[in-house]
Image 1: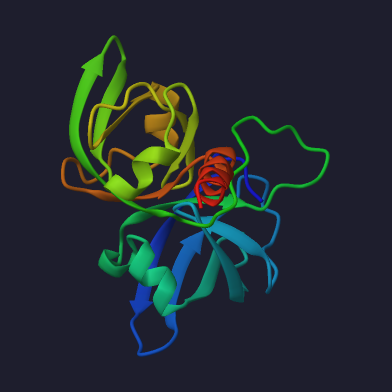
Image 2: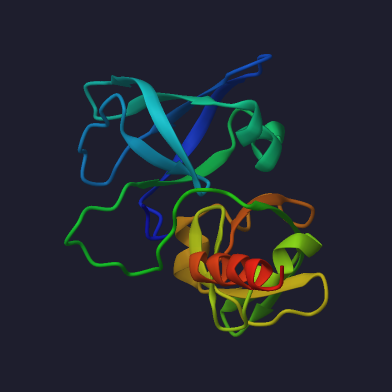
Length: 204
C-alpha cells in the first residue's frame, strides 16, 4: 500500500523486453539513505513492483532491478519507457505513518494521455484524455493517482480528466516532463472501484 506522495525521482538505466518477464533497471537514491532490500515493494510511476536485485554504491546511490509481467507492460505506460527518463518512486507505507495523500494500491487500472497544460497563478491546470472504461471510477473532488502522484480531480468533461499541479508537485515529480502527448499510469479511487462493482452485481 502507498500514499501517492513521491519520495524520490529515479532514472531508467535499462528496459529489457522479453516474451515473458521484462526487466526494468533504475538508478535511485532515497532522501533518508535507507537501503532497499531484495523483495521490497516500490511504486514506480504508481505501479507496485518488487525489487529482485539491489546494488548500493558507497555514496548511497542504488541500482534497482524489477521484473514486469506481460500484463503489467500491457496495462501501463512501461512499454514506451526509455533509458534516461525520470520515474516517480515511493516505498511501501508503514503502519503508523501519516497518510498525507490517499490509499494507493499500486495496481494500475489503465493509462491517460496528457493533452494540455495551462499556467494558473503559479500552478498548472492539466488536462488528460482518459479511457471510457475508467470514467465511472472518477469523481469530481475525489482522488486519483497519476504516475503514482496523489491528486484531486477538479473536473470531468466527457472523456477528460482535469487536475491542478502546485509548484511543489511539479518540482518533485516528473508529471510535466515530456509535455503534451505523454502517457501516464492511472489508478482510480479504490472506493469508487468497489462501488462500481457492487452496482454491477446488484443489477444482475
